[in-house]
Image (tube, rainbow, N blue to C red; front, side):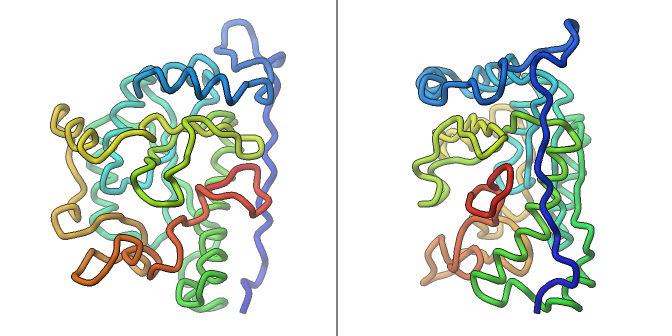
Length: 267
């Protein structure tokens, strides 16, 4: 059963560089003018902090970041907010997160003085389940519809309302097969996504957390390798592969970081 009123994901409209006043940071001419091949070659030689500074120089006030406040989210949150104090941090609240995650959000918001922007679906979890049932139990198609409603639509709205043309994420190639070939910079329709720590392994992540004494997610010590919604995330147990800990092994991505849905970005 489909949701009563299908959500149409909005197309994003970004102002061109010529519309900015001289006293505001400028983005690169037109977004489409960025040479992805040359930019990725340059980004390969930079540190994650330098990659963030590079993005800020190009996108200026139109640079945002997103965070799931998962197991390793503290790294990019600290790194980005240090390089660009006050950068908007988009947090998409599905309404189905672990209680520990909600507490972790509050903890990091206060410790790092984050400019947190919380976005949710206009359809409440209760209404969605009443109209469509538990979509995450309906195979890949149901999982994808769930992701569109609870994650993609809110993120799309956030990018539009914040006027974002550049978007920082904490994706890492080591996390899954679907991410192993991610470049540093990619264009997903009209939104540029930069993954500053995409080439980092878990050792570098842990080293950074310890160096800056950052709090880790409370569920890190309970056997979780990844964190998302309560109904779709399992801790690693004997006989399971890492893939099995997310969406029952059906898929890894929630929709925010994959294309093919006709949005102005892929997540």
